[in-house]
Length: 195
Image (cartoon, rainbow, N blue to C red; front, top):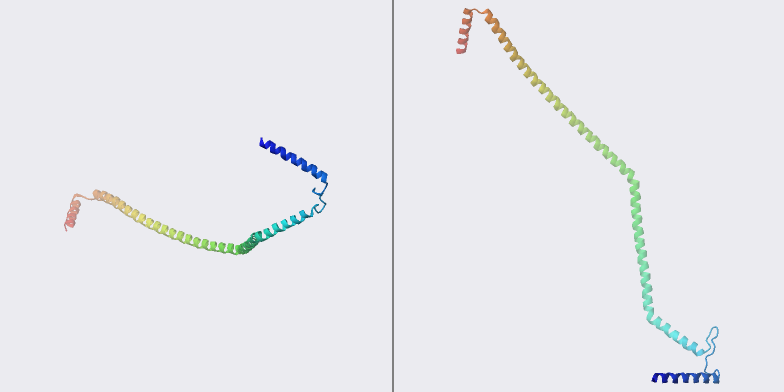
């Protein structure tokens, strides 16, 4: 309730102030602002003083931070330029190495081909020498096998001829021998075996 009474008193006093101002004219009222400057010059003076104080405070307290930020940006850009220069130098070195490798590729290709041809010729000579050696071994074994077969066949043939000749001789002797000649041969044989 006190609140309502207080609000009514404020409203009443405000209304009285408005009527008093209207009665007294323009002595306490605001003047209309001009295009460039406000109507009250005190406002310009105090606004300018406040602006200069704020600007001086920013300059005094903010200058080191702004300067540090500015120098940090300069250092960062200088570092990036240095890194870019290093990267460019490295890339140019790699480019020249690749270009020299490309230029030397024909020489390298010829060297590899020459080396491969030499290896192929050496390998071919080794294969031919081994083949000739193997062929000589096969020929020698073949000749030895042929000699052994020939000797075996000769031995078999002699045995067979001996057997046939013995059989033929027995037949001839059996038909041509009489009892007295046969007894004489037996005695000679026994004498030969006994001796």
